[in-house]
Image (cartoon, rainbow, N blue to C red; front, side):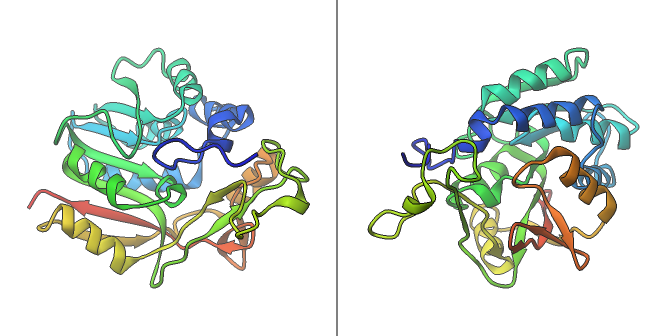
Length: 267
């Protein structure tokens, strides 16, 4: 068995079929679990730059657990649309926000968003870009869909790294690849996930190709409580949970240089 990918190269293993992950997202959205530290930070960042009645697009929304932080942080009204590639997440998002008339959801891919040009004032995309096989098309779609601002949380460094976490059935629930057969004869992993780190220079080049006049800001995501992240990792028991080592965010053996990329398109 190889990994489950669609025509865009999107990894379908954990995010397509992990009922446990979707339950965690649902509980975060409804308040049964604490907000993520990253969603708190995103909400503060967007609240400081948002205007009343603006339209927000959340790409890779999961069960819209980031909306909970936005609603708590922002005192005035706004409209929210969540896009995700997986019906499982969207169905739970609709349940979580069934009483919220200004929230709606669409099925779609980051490579081909179901949006019109400039339909949204603010487009945000959190913890998705690093898991995709390429940047060019998704970055173009985020920028195309926004009239004013794009906010991205992902892994950004001064060098780029192509990182694949290789799965086997000894520890990962959703593959039948054995530990003795993790790779094909040509060295390709049979089941894996990307956790790519891209350089600031590469991000800037792609953004400028799609929006030459854009103003770009890189903000290190260091506004988090270590104890809250460690508690979530312990309680939720997700294999991809972030942990804190030496004050740094770590996933498995990978140190995670999370940053926010703020793209101002307003000219």
